[in-house]
Amino acid sequence: MEKTAAELDSAKNFITHYYFVYGNKVIGAVIILLAGGLVARWLGKFMQRWLDGKQLEPPVKTLIVRVLRLLIFCLTLVIALDEFGVPITTLVAGISVAGVGIGLAMQGVLGNLVAGLTIIFTKPFRVTEYIEIHGIHGTVTQIELFSTTLVHADRSRVIIPNRKIVGEILHNYGTIRQLDLTVGVSYSANVTEAIALIRDILKQNPRVLKEMVPGVGVSLLGDSSINIAVKPWVAAADYGAAQAEIYQTILDQFRTRQIEIPFPQREIRLLNGDVPPARVPAAGLH
Image (cartoon, rainbow, N blue to C red; front, top):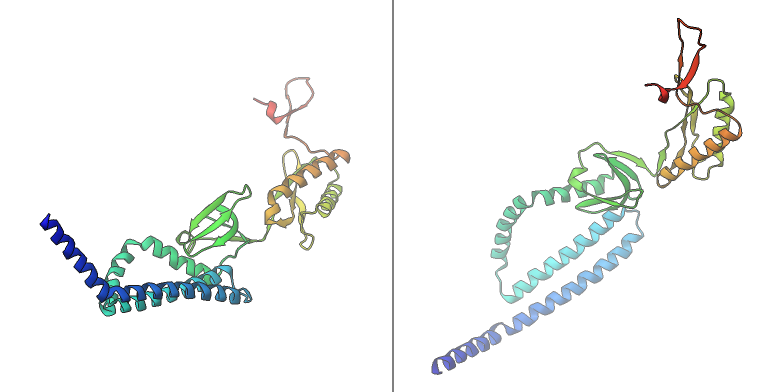
């Protein structure tokens, strides 16, 4: 019992001594950290409002605000540690040595960071633009320091590390895309009439951009049909819907105007017989 009481007295004396020596410093350091956090938050909001009135990319604004808050917090932490009696010079030297090891262990993360800064400042693409890289394509919805987010037409998201983007071949469609459609008509059809009808269909479709002249014309003289290329421009978000609508309208209008869309055919001639030539679908041949 006497030993336990002595240990309790020793602990009580240590706590009392620590409180009188460092108590005020600890309270002062906590107050400094709280004040620094509030100042960093307030200045961050003020900077965000000021940047909203400037012609800058959203990722650049976010980067500036985050760097400002980080600098204020680091300065506050240094002041708090100094108040607490920590030798700042020794601490900075230790952080520098540790930073080398951390940098080697986080090469991938740092690579994403450098690539993100490169994307933000060189601007190879912007938010709302449609891009394709490594066979992955979609509309850019977010550009961050470490990754870029794309959204597909089916609303699924693809998150690409920025180091996978910088230095690679990038196809940037912008905000519009050109459809590449093909329609076949019979050799007996009036091709001029068919082309005029297709142009009229494109003019009537609300998804087709009217300020850009669509490409419509004969692209191939095939075995069974004359192929007409149809290449209108649409917004990137309307790419899939516009293709289906245009094909459906062409099919309906061709049937109404009795413009034949032929299926593949082969002509068979029997050289040593009296059976006349016959045409059969290519799918019927074995």
